Length: 215
Image 1 (spheres, rainbow, N blue to C red):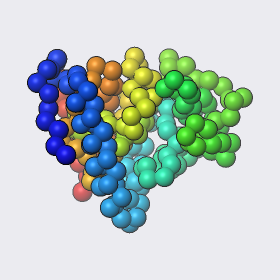
Image 2 (tube, helix red, strand yellow):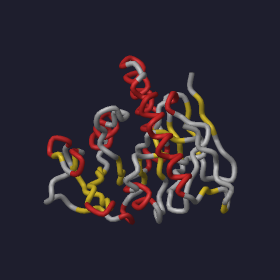
Image 3 (cartoon, one colour):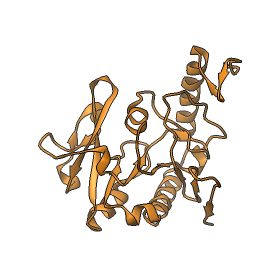
């Protein structure tokens, strides 16, 4: 099925139901592409992504880092989470709630994480909530993204709502083979400041874009 872009545009953003259908079709296509990735490629790519990310100045300078806990076919974030804890930084992990809401809670050990919303591992209820003002750097998942920091998630809108009014840098991590040329966005879609893949780091928030590429 082919969905043509709608002609009603506002600041380059598509704003119709046809556009939302287009996003759903993109999700289906990208999930199929992800199924074709070999375990060898994913393991190598995830390791390099972790190295790229933990080498960033934003990561090194941050005292409190917000990072998702990976599951299933997502990029493995456990090396990143472990590095945060081992370096003495505060680790804030998302906890999803009804109504598309998400909050961050501090954890001092990955072993204390328990299945929560959608079966995603999260801190238990007695952990301390971390306010947005305390976060220095965020690491965000995607199904796919483009090089402008526009991401396509799974349709729940949790991260878009949570990241909408942030005052800290946020990086979206994506395997090279899952990148898209362009992700159309709506008014409520949050755009990330950095894109990190196994091959490059792209900063999208400055007047000029700085790209660091590794062979």
